[in-house]
Amino acid sequence: MSARTARERLAEAQATLVRALAQGAPVPPGFDSARVQATAETLLSKRRRWVERSWPRLVAALGESFRSRFEAWARENPMELEASALADGRRFADALLAAGEFPSSESAHEELLTFEVRFRLTEHGLVARRGLTFKSMRTGAATLLAARLPGGRVLRLRLPF
Amino acid sequence: MKPLSGVGLGWRRQLAHRIDQETELGFVEVLAEHLNPTAPLPAPLVRLKERGLPMVLHAVSLGLGGAEPPDPRRLDTLARLAERLGAVCVSEHVAFVRAGGIESGHLLPVARGDEALDLLAENVRLAQAALPVPLALENIATLFEWPEPAYTEAEFLTGLLSRTSTLLLLDVANLYANALNLGTDTAAVLAAVPPERLAYVHVAGGVRHGALYHDTHAHPVPSGPLDLLETLAAQLGPVPALLERDDHFPSPEELTAELRAIEAACARGVARWKSEVAQRPELHAVTSSAPEVRP
Image (cartoon, rainbow over the protein chains, first blue to last red):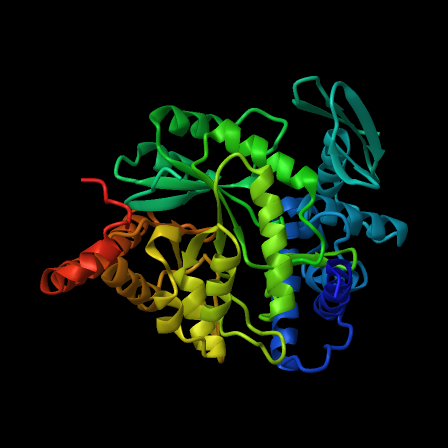
């Protein structure tokens, strides 16, 4: 048996297990199904708690609906590039924006804007911006402006129109 | 590797001030994934480095138990961080973390058979070749196992140690959790630890939810892991042991009490080891290679 074949076999077996853990796919035969499901719940709540920490204002603005919304979204959208809560929360925010369900809270918009001037999501994952970056965002009652200065400081401004 | 000694504490930003003030710590462990590889090191870590406090770089995302060889970019990042910190070793886990393009964000168990063991050993050798300091591997806690394991946890660790030159980071809290949740034979695992291959020991707290014990690093350390630490020290003599606390940080007094409890468990074990050695001097030759505790 070549090492390549062994790696391929292992890759397939591990992928089947990870799909069961991260996406609720059927538990592969031979495993203790209840224990795999208990682990899946641990993974999901860990992922949710990470996002709660990285995106506290968005989470606060969603209130009690955050948990169920995030968990439903997370099962459909496993972490693919990196286990990063900042990136995970940003993708969740994207899903809310696309569905027109991003909370109207200025605080949550400000958090998103701060992320936007500091990072960008690329096909390789989260990348920290360098140099000077400006971004603006309209909320119901105001326009929010943010600038990332060279060196990393972020300045914010709220225009009441 | 430069031997570690005494009681250590996992460095976290929330504990940085405490660790800065602490004079009795033997060593600290720094989480690789919490450091920005392109930014300067956090100032408190620079101070610890200047103080000469031994540091271990601890990583969770290499996935050495995975089907893929370890990612050269991840290894390169670890190697650079280890050099910048002046780390005495890099530690990782006997686990896989990603498969099929999905990041689990968790340490998942490897199948305990020859095929998985051979691939793990190959991945370990690739990682060792890329790192500037020794690698130590940690046993994980898991709620489930792969079907029909060919080896027990103790046999699997022995197999890994014989197939590679890796050091061992024995986590007694993970071992305790697996004993409760899976019936792992703790005595067999402790007996499988060669003194010259033990880098250090992890101790952490957890909580019982229903029938399962969860290794959370966010609750007090129960007596179980401390008993295992004592047994290990009774077998090997002084062992360096480090407390991991990741969340719900306790008051300074509670943290001190936990560090002292670890020290006391080690001391009880060492006392048993000494009386054993005194009664059976032939044991001394075997056990004298255990690292010395700082006076």
